[in-house]
Every structure is written in structure tokens, then in C-alpha cells.
Image 1 (cartoon, helix red, strand yellow):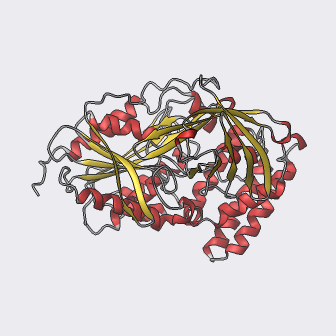
Image 2: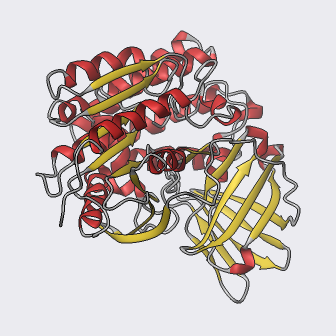
Image 3: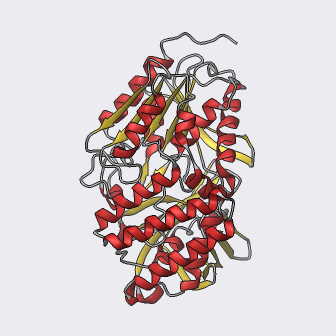
Length: 483
């Protein structure tokens, strides 16, 4: 789940830089293929970055790394390169509509980055050796050759094409698990801080006789659409479209389909399961770090945990909680203008409280970015969400796992709420608190977001075994349906 604090406490570099970097995402011509390195220098800060583009069957894809921050493998999207050397890439799903426009001249890309009212020069050079720093080892990342079939697939969703990867074991009409990403623009591998969570899950499932379908979020990779504009109805519609796609295939068993959602995906999955009207049916759910309390309470508890780790003053936290409660009230009344005014005021307060050396070079751009996110339907639906309502309607086996050290979907608030909501729904349903794990279900020291990239493990092996064993028991205990 996103940290909705407009400016995180005691941040060491401007928010504008972080959002700007998340826009280095895009290309559609082979001249871009390879690794590019450079540095951003807003306000005297030298921040090393690396961008890598690769030709795949789905087209040119890419990632970017920020080695000084321990961030690797961030997915890229919206890429265009013309024959006359013009290059464009942007991040339409991010606040402030960040865009890069420039020229490609041999081994260099130069141009201007814009976000809101901000304009900054940008330069990258081709790095044949990839010397911007090797990404940390991820021992669980699947590496070919695989003992199962891997197929890149596309299907029609509510907003256009959805693109993903289907993994199928070598068995007739296997069951399939749909893997639903958490918040933010993620690729089909569910890459967060260099950890391909959904790829690791798909690999573990396929090795145990279970298929998996994972896909790029709207506006990422090969998928059309705008993630921020989708709203929860749109994201539920994407899941329904994926289920229908599987229902029309002859090589899977549509009577044995399950949903697995992580974080915000754990809000979408129960809604999709309860709104399907059995066409096709969902046989089971797995919910990983899934919110069970109302959205505004989720954001409050999240901010409390993150502010505590950052050592923020109690007065700062009180001001943030007051803002979140007022924001919720305004959105609940349908008053978007009031919500926007609250966000702009709160962001301005936080910017003013920063030491001058940490303030972004263009304050208006940061304020515009905060306002843009507040207007996004998907963000508003999070604030207004009541996930327990859908949980209480579930009638199929459900496994919900929570990490004890999760600071984004805190266990102390959500575990009991999930148990109450799921009580009596199905005899095979279980809610489990896993000691020592964070929001990604990694073994963690503090649970802080900054730790994610530093941890070698993508998913704790014990948690992974629980997930696969549960789905084996539910989906492989019945014979395939003949069609």
C-alpha cells in the first residue's frame, strides 16, 4: 500500500527527485536497447541512476535502478523513439504526469524532464559494461530453463489490452491462480524494490502442479490504460477479464481458478470473487498483507507506524492524522475540491517544515503532484474503501497471511479485523500472523520500507510453503472438469 504522507518525515532528498526517477520508464525502438547511466542533479544533489531497455516478444521493456537508494528493477512504461532521434518516455500513472522528452544521439540521450511546472535537464549515456553497480543477489528469482510451460499472453480488458504471462505445469487442464499486484504501477512480475514477487510465486506454484496468470498493471509494459484513473471498479473489471480469458482456453480447468492478491490486490480479489456471480466461479482466495480495516483507518495506522520508525515528533503525526480524517470526510461527501485544498495545504506545511537544503527546487511542482494524486479515482477509492464488507461475503476457502513487522498494513489492526470478517465464511478459511515478516513477507529487522531492497529473500520460504500447500489442498483435491 502507498505511504500517503505527502512528504515523508526526515526525508534526505526532495520528493520531486523520487517521483522524477519513477518516470524513467520508456522506449519502443531497438536503438534504446541496452543499459544507460547518468545522474540527476536538482538542487545540487548528485543521484546516480541506471536505465536498462530490453527487446522481448511483447516489445521493448525496461527497468531503472537507483543504486544509492538500494532500489533496483523498477519497471518502465510508455516508451517511444522515432527514426529522427526523438525520444519520449513518461509515467502517466504517477502524480504530476512526469515526462521526458529529448533526443538520442549515438551513445547519449539528452533532453528535458517535466513534472507539473518543474523543468529539469537530463542526460544518460550508454554503458556497455553496466557499471552503475550490480543489483543485489535475489536467490529466489526464477531462472530458465523451467520444468513447466511459459507463455506470453494478451486479452481484452475494460480499458484495452492486458498483457501477461501464463505458466502451466505439464498436466492436463491444471487449475490456475490469478496473481493480483498491490498498489502502484507494477509489471507482471510484481517487481518491488528489485524483488519480482509474483514471478517467484508463479514459479513455486508451477513446480507443484498449479498454473498461474500474472499481468502488467494498466499503463505498464504491454497493458493499456491509466492505473490512477481505473478506480477499484476498473481493477475488479481487469480481474474479471482475466478470468474470462482463462475460461475460454481449453488447456486449463475453469472450475478450479483461484485469486491471490497482495496488499491493495487483497482488496480487489475479494470484491472480484463476490461480484462474479459464478461466471466463472472462484474456487479459493489467498490474501497477502490484505487490508481488512476501512481505508482511512488503514492510512492512519500506516502513518503511525512509519512516523514512529522515522522518529517523528508527535505533533507532526497528529497533524497528519487530522489531515487524513479531514480528507476522508471531504471525499465521503463527494467534495473533491475540498479534498484538493486540504492536500495542497498539508503538502505546503510539510515542505515549509523541511530544512532548506532538503526542499525541492520547484515547490509548485510538488504541490501539483500531490493534488494530482488526490484527484485520482484509484487513490480516492482506497481512502473510502471498506474491505471487511467483501471479506464477509466470501464463501470459498481463504488463506490470509500477515507479517508481524508490516508497517504498511499493520498486523495489530488488520489481523483481528480479518478474523472477524471471515468468521463463519468457510471451514477451510484461516488467518495467520507470521512472526518477523514485513509487508512483502520477507524476514525483516524493523519492517521499514527502506529495508525491502536490502533483504536478499523475496518471500520467506515458510510463507511460500504455506501458500502453495493451501492451494494444493484446495485446488488439486478435485479432478479436472471435462469440457
